[in-house]
Image (cartoon, rainbow, N blue to C red):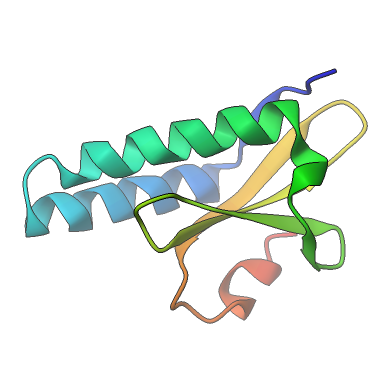
Length: 98
């Protein structure tokens, strides 16, 4: 059984900022990030328990090719993405979003 994945506004903003920053480094790099995010979200949708809990009920999934992490929680009827942040960021940056 799969649950719908919902991106909170903060997570959408995280993705847009990361995409813009990567495109500033090299045109098209932001689109590559977006493709990796979509892959991870599809995997989370079908198998959220595959990813371990990192803080309280929040789980984390790493992106391939990029050092970004998708933080999410599994609820009874949906999966909510809290944040999509670079792995070097302080982990407390997203914890207040839970």
